[in-house]
Image: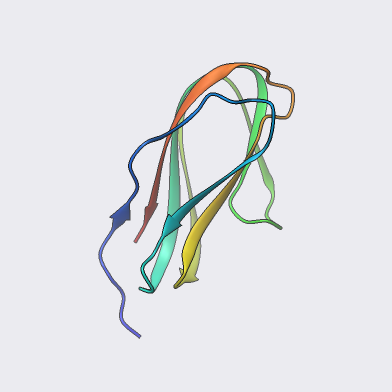
Length: 99
């Protein structure tokens, strides 16, 4: 098994707060041991991020400037799950990374 360098996505902007969004980073079949999501922006109420479909919820609100990291060991893609929860508007810039 080989471990590759960092793969980073272009910024993904979230402005639609009417439905959940799955954010994915294609790993091109390379193994990465960690994944991360950087989130910056502002929302009018609570949102949450899950690092995997069965992971804990990380609640955020108001002005946001944070990074979440998680062990991965995946080869196909690194996915993150965004839920608007109580928020109805805002703008979040996200950058996905795997390393």
